[in-house]
Amino acid sequence: MRRFFLRCAAAALAAVLTLPPALAAERDSEMVRVGLAYGSGALASANLENNTGYGSGYRLGYFDGDLDFVELARTDEDETQLTMLKTQNTWVNGSSYAGSDNGGDVIGCYHVLVEEGLRSYSQAAREAEAYRDGFVAWIDGDYQVRAGAYPTEAEAEDAAWDLDGEVVGTSSYAVNVTVTGTDQILFQFDGGADTALGVMPDVTGADTVRTWFKGYRYHGGFRYERIGGGDLTVVNIVDLETYIKGVVPYEMSNSWPLEALKVQAVCARSYAYINIQSSKHTSYHFDVCNTSDCQAYYGAGTDRASYQSNDRTDRAVDETAGEYAWYDGQVIEAFYSSSHGGASESVYNVWGSSLEQYPYLCGVSDPYEADVAGQNSYSSWTVSYTGSELARRLADRGYDASSGVQSMTLTYSDLGNVIQVRVNYQDGGSDTIKPVSMRSAFGLPSIRFTVNGQEASSGGGSSGYGGLTVNGSASLDAQGTYTVISGSGAQSQISLDQLYTISGSGTIVPAEEYGAAAAPETPSGTQVTVRGGSYTFQGSGYGHQLGLSQYGAMAMAERGFSYDEIIEFYFPGTYVR
Image (cartoon, rainbow, N blue to C red):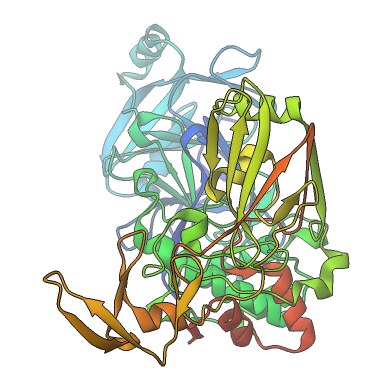
């Protein structure tokens, strides 16, 4: 909208307020709603500031069901800073906003309605010029002119008498758009529970637009929604490829090899696709969040060169645009973490998920990470506890460790990762800790470690399982023939390809496929029992041990592998297209 008179002294803004045609919202690819502030982090006040040189002013309105922006109003291009506020009594003192008197000016929740049923924003803005502290409001599709912002109904009634108007408020979903650091309302928006305020930076038609929000610069538009009448849920709305450009440099260093950055781009795009389809954040009305719960996302970043998108990261996204990692005709959930320390792990061992659901997360031995060990601060790590310290840590996390730790029995997978720890206590009790809880329980970066230097005597070699294990030791030869006994006692000869296995999770798989092609869901483990007055964990890697190792991708890129080869190595059986 055009800035209108909020103070009589603002006469210089009395130019003719014709509303230019709305700038077309380009839809180059699927639009993504990214949660920037929500839940317990929702905001009572939310600031925006133009990034100098990348567009000026703001358009105000809402995003429709297709995420196309519908413009209702706009500011002058010299309006560079906005603050969105809940429509409740708010005191502003410099950069401080508060719900109680902080010594500043108050933006009250009572107003005087002086005009309604106006045809357009332009008409409403012209009418608002006639009133001290007048502003345009859009209330459920109706343009109105309101005046003043009073903290009490009595004050508003006094003003209404003078203005021959009516005292009004808003619903609990309404938002005020104000000039940052002042009590000036530029626009009031109340679309009820179904329509939230949208802000699109720039009224000048700049090719590239960036806007500061909470210390980071973002492309695209913003939505401010008071879900359930609460604080402001802030959502950044951008196209998918722009979103990926805002992920890559914060999940992987922007100085790493181009092929590694391309790996990150494809994995981030695939992971985002799965998250969007899953409707994970439906209750907050967005697709993905900006934290590690989804993927780190900070748009164009800060002013610090090492923490922003650059030509290299943008190129990685552009040169892989539209590409995903696939397995058997489906986009994969491309999990990744910093480093594995020598091998990733089966998703069944880490999270208990079926390998039928995630066949590409079967775990691989990784010889490449070692190339860049000097650059990875987690290539080797040590965490130590006395026995009493360890018992106290476990007790604080809800384990029955009050009697003290007597010993620990570690189970190692064939890939050399710890897939179970049984902590044995002095009173004869024990707790069994799985990988999903292991890092938190012991305060460790990964599940690849030894305790007190005691290593497993076997395992740690390969992700392949050349036969079907029987009774924990012997295995079935794929070329052999076997005798089976039916329920009636009849005997018959069959080959391995006629056998089926039932895994511990209930999955039925042909025995030949189970033995030769995929890691068993309950791999035979090697156990090590450790005792002592203290416990020193020595290990390598950082993260959940699934899928892609980012440092491994860096090392493979430096060896000359292409991005699709790297993805296909860490996610066996996948392909990029």
